[in-house]
Image (cartoon, rainbow, N blue to C red; front, top):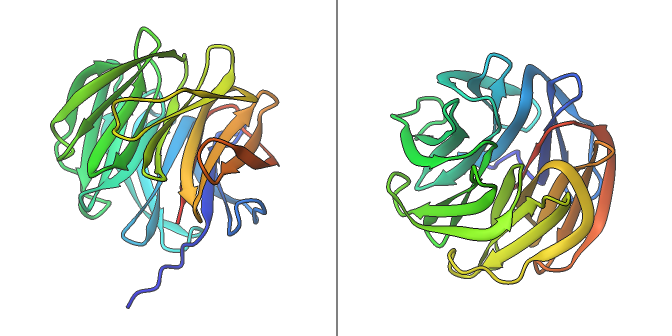
Length: 275
C-alpha cells in the first residue's frame, strides 16, 4: 500500500519578486523552510492534493494557466501549461475522482475544466456568470461548489452534482471587491471573504444555500484570503495590510485562535491546503 509523503498544512504564495513559494507545518503553527519555485506569476495561485500529489496551479506572467505537482511537497515536476488564459487568480478542488480547475477568463466569465490524471484536461465548461476578480471551489455534501464575487461586488455561490451542470445559485447581501474562500468543515460549508472595510469575514451553511450570521474578525487585509482543514481545525490565512502572511485556526469555525505571523511577505493572494 502506498504511503503518502505529504502531511501537514501547506501554504503557498506569490513572493514580492513574483516567484511562487511553498511552506508547510505539521502542527499548523511552526512552519519549516520555504521552497522557492523558478516559476513566476503576477497574481495568486491555488493548492490541492490529488492522487497523493500536491498540485499547485497559477496564472503565468503570460496569463496562461499552469499546473505542477509533487509527491513530497518539495520537489515539483510534470508541469502542464494550458492554452487557457486569465489575468486573475484561480482555484483547485478534487471532486468525483477528478482534479477540477476553475478560473476567471479574460472576458470575465467563469470557467471550469477537469482531469482524471492531473495532466490531461478535458473540454472547459463556461458559465454565464462573470466576475472581476477570482473565485473559489470546495466540495460539500457530494456537490462541487463555486463561489465568486460578482461584477456588482455581491458574493455568489452555485453548485453541481456532476461538475458540469450548475444550479441552486445563491446571491448573498454581503459584498467584497477581492477574492473569497470556501471550505467544508464540521458538516458545514464555510465561506470567507475580505469585506469592503478590509476586515475578514466568515459565514457558514448546513445546506450550501442558507447561510447564518457572519463572523467579523478584527484582522484586516488589502487582498484575498484562503481556507483549509487540517487535524480537525479550520485554518484561515491572509496577507496582512503590512504584507506579512498570517495564519489563524479554529476548532469550531466560529472562534479563532493561535495566530501566527510569518516573516514572509506577499502583495497578492495566497493558497492553503491540509493533508
